[in-house]
Image 1 (cartoon, rainbow, N blue to C red):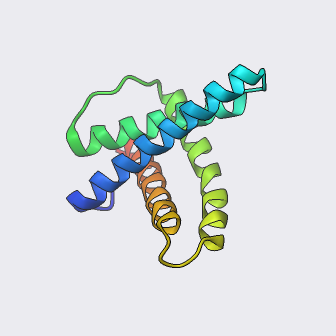
Image 2: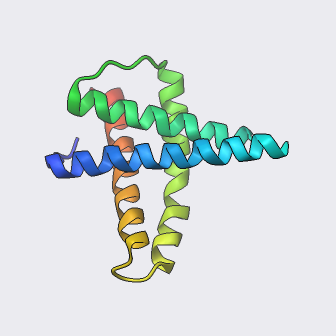
Length: 121
């Protein structure tokens, strides 16, 4: 896996935590409204696994996921990148939103790389 500085590791973990909180809030709101939550639940699970993989690689924290769950998580995370990149392209240079999206893209790519290394190693 590409070596990440301590600052990049911290930013990536914070990015995942922030994204997970946003998804949990959205999930609660959608559940309250009776909307279909299957896709959001799948994304939320993938984000949690992505975070767990990074914390395992960088901080040796244990995680308990089946290989199938990890593979599915990788697929979902890979599918998120194009939409994040589109939002990034539309955001204004120097804006906090652009910085947030830049970090989100980087953290998701690092998680995918860690998942790939998990299966290759």
